[in-house]
Image (cartoon, each protein chain N blue to C red):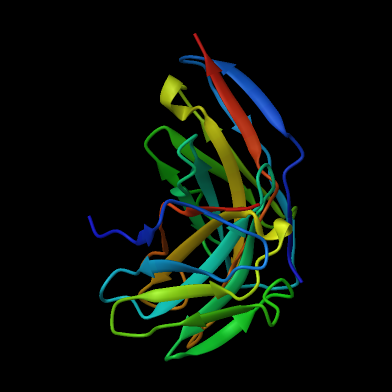
Length: 115
Length: 117
């Protein structure tokens, strides 16, 4: 069964450093998403991406965050200057259409720890 | 904006018994989807079951079924014949029906389910 792949599984970074989280969505999917889950809390939407541009972003997704699809397969989330409160599990997801008609698959997540 | 409420932070059930997890939501939308996701200790988000709001029939997937009450905005998950592998965090989630654009999921705060021997 096709998977959404996220790397690395765990990243530790120093406060103020830039970090890039990588995702490889399912190959025929067109819509891409990032979600965040602070430990012990609910999963929160960050951003959706379609046709090489952001479709929607949440209030969490401020100027420190950016997303990019640099080639035909990768989808990245960059945090420019990490803060302690950015420590969380980050999930990438993809879907072939924008709704749930054909599936919405999550990756296994990247645990980001900011020290 | 939509909100999803899960009022049971933790639940416990014995193996082979049945358990029901509660979820309520608030929306002014008429067309939407509802989901239950399972998050085991590995932290991966796994879809358990989904329900289209326009369908009156409750969704079922093997041992998992839902009780969808649209007027009451209630969407509970019933797990029958509970197994140790069902131990996980369970999240209820809402998605608006949109066409031509990405639609985000709004999650509840989760219910931690422990299945015991």
